Image 1: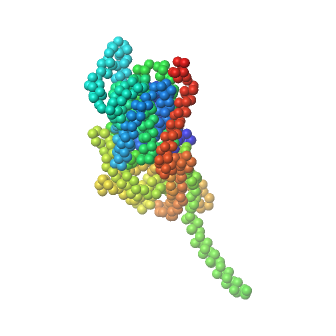
Image 2: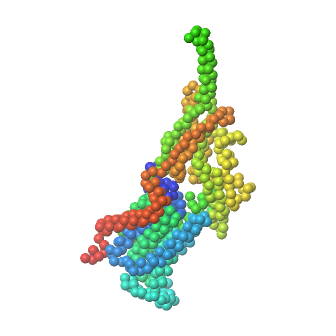
Image 3: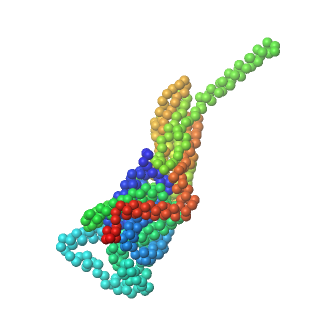
Length: 310
Length: 265
């Protein structure tokens, strides 16, 4: 079939329209809801037949494009805290390197694919549940039950813990003073998960920036996208050098769909109800999670698999 | 030259010519050349598997089997096990002697569906060649081989196609056999052997083969070579291209839509 793209790293052909559609719709959803979208792209690529290790590494590469596009838009609006972003990246550099090594080890013992899939089930499950709960709470609150979210955001112990940590620094753009340890630790954790899953990590980083680093909402998205560019660039380099699993041919088609889709998504988002959008995204996330879980739970069609993926 | 000598030469030459004719006739009858089209498969950017047509002339009344075989490889497979209610990779098994690709098709379906014990084709022959080592018991070899075949067939790398070859025309004591096979999209570059077995009354009459080359060309070849041989350069190139593409799209959309600061002014 002429409209198939041959992926030389996966050694497999995928329909070009399917890839463009995946890139475009995930980019649209991410632009619509303000998240990276990598956590959806990798499992969808796996469902399209791409081996999980190639899907995860290639997705990191295409996130560099979509995050650059988004970060540039936020930079023009003056909503990127570069100083905070660099500290998060410093942690992310170590975390993502550790993540790539974990995947390398898992490939050697033949459990990389399972490890990626089960990590997805856990993270998508948690994320989908909280997103759905959050959007339902917001919708209820708008119908006359005020104070529900404010109560949950209170955290005196958390505030005291943050104040007790050493090496404090002022982050002017975000308007917060906090210990350097926090952004570095947050970056390290998210970087590690991002490397394992082939995601930008925005869906974990955004709540951490809001609730742990106490950054204001208008700076959170731009700063997150900026650090995603750096972390995913590092992951792409590491995956290419260590595991040889980055497929440029695949990434090019995906990024051409996702970068354009994200821009349209961002425009549509301005005209739609944010809580309803969040509910839609939560449903998509939970559906993907259930699909992966079903595949892991029910008896497989094949009782043998190729070691380390296809 | 004397007439007696001329006669003697003629008497000697005629039997000699007849003798050579006699020995060359069976040779002609038992030789067949297989033609494949294309004889070189190129894996380009839009490759999604390819159909290879084949034709061969065989002695009339014979049946034929065509096998497409890759080189023997050693590969590790894992057996799925259920732990904590989830299916995950468990026991590792090393497979030796299995070809990377095995496709077999026949003119007579029974040759592949119920081959004779002495048959030198089909899955039964592979079963004798392939060995499994690692965490597998001798008694499990049969079931592991069956699972291995299922895995390879799901990847379209193995396949048996009884009756897929058609005896299409006859001329004299020869008949033409035509058929085709699909090389899957996940076939690895290399040289494959297309073997022809001509069978008469269940017995192998003769066997011939030709090579079929599969090569990666163009953009996939460039990407593959860069990724494998210049990984550092390739990694940074991937990052640079992605960042540039993101920036270009950002610029294009920024131009088409004024941002907040511009709106304020």
